[in-house]
Every structure is written in structure tokens, then in C-alpha cells.
Length: 341
Image (cartoon, rainbow, N blue to C red):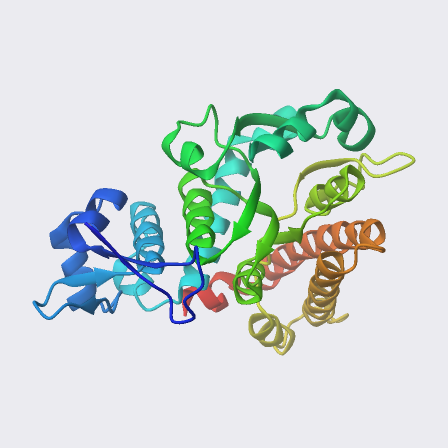
């Protein structure tokens, strides 16, 4: 059972939906008894309660429960997961998705990024021969298209796409939660949302979760830039231009972890751990800056899409280099990951 409560601001189309524990159990596949244990013993949630002591879970609680279930099924202890913020859970889940994709060799086998598209109009644009030929060449494979979020949520995808492109008219908090829940359910690595109208707080919340967000009108040229900005630049194969063949992975180590690595005394005379860690921080900062510019500046979108792809690719490569250095110096990066604190 769900209860729809009008928002404080009273804006149309932006209700706060609350769910009874039975509805949450049905949506997430988590038994009611388990939800109670996670709340009481591990403080994983703090649901509101009615006068009759019935628990009322928010949409964010439902999303959090889904993440906890998926991560616990991958072997993570619920006692550790329960203390993490939702953003940290999403980062941990994203790292697990990347590892799964690499192990399966999907990107290497196809050389193309798989994408699902939601929104009839934008799906037609992406699938047109003109768009594919002039903008994305052979780097993208559209696996599924759906007219709206409701049908996408109820459908069985033909395969798990790496990229999700969503077009909505009005972007409010319940739609944000629906998009994030779908992305989590399908194991999406990167989500791009194009909208016509939205509350600024909702847009900022999505950007904080690593979602690329852009307001209409957006031309085919700008849309291709937005998609290309999350594709990895493969410098080993690039001849006379960029040849993206995978998605740029999210940051693996935060600034605090890198600072601790930089301060560790090692036997490497050239101080490689410090130099590599500092380079990663600088590249990550520029990657974030170029993404903000891409979101806000339509005039320079093409340049900032290029800069975001370059800086993100370089940052990912230096993260791999850091892991090589850490292995050589017996530095345990996993022990210092913010997700393991």
C-alpha cells in the first residue's frame, strides 16, 4: 500500500510517496522480517511511522533497500553496508558492475557500448541512420527502446546495457527516484537524462549522483557530444582521432585516500606513489570541472565533451598505474578505500 503526501511547496506533479513495509518487500524482494532486522539491529533505515506504529518508507528508502540487497548478495556484510551513506552504496555497486563487465569481456568482445533508450522521440533520433552515421559511427549499440519509464520498468531488457539515455518532459523527485531505481536494477554504468522542465534541486541531486543531465532543446550535435563525453578514449587504437570503445569508469579512490597514499614512505626513489596520486587528484578535479561546463554551456559543449572524455580516460589510466605502483610497494589501496571505512 502506498500513501501519497503532497509536497510542502505544493507543486503539482511532485508528490512524496510513502510505502508500507509490505509494499517495500514486494518491490525489492526483501522479506518483511529482514527489513525489520536491518532497521532495528543495523539502523539501515529510519522510516516514519503512523499513529498506529506502521512503518512508512520513502522512495529513497526503497532505493537504499534495493542497493543493500544487491550488495549483500555479492558477499558484503550488511553490518558494514548499513552504516554507509546511499551515495557510497551506489559507488560500491558501480564498482561491482564495472568489475563484472570487465570479467565478462563484453566491451573487449564487441568494441561497442550498449545503450537502452527511454522516450519515443529521442529513441527515434538515436536510431536514425543519419544520427548514427554522422555522430556515433560504430561506437554505440542500442539494445532496447521504450516509450516511457513505466514500460521500461515493467519490461525485461534484451540484455543489460552499459548506458541509459532517458528523455522526460517534467523531471521531479519521484521521477528522479524512478530513474535511479531502474538504473540500479539494470546494472547501468552511466545514465544521461534529457528534460524540458525541472526543479533545480532535483537536477543538482542527480548530478551529485554522477548522472549527466541536460535541458531541452538539444540538437543532435549536442546530444552526440553528451554521449561521447562518457566514452573512454582508447589512445592505443586511436589513429587520426578519437576511438571510444568503453565507458569511462567512476573514480575508484577519493582525495583522502590519495593523500594518504602520497604520504606513505616507499622504496621508490622517484616518489611514484606521491606523483601518481597527485596527478589523479588533478585529473579528477578537471574532469569534474569540464562536466559542469558541459552541463551549463551549450556554446562550448563540443569542446567540454572532448575535455571530459580526455581527462576521465587519463584519470582511469592513472588509477590503473597507481594500482601497479601499489602492488609493487605492497600498499593496500582497498584497505584505504572510503567504501571500506
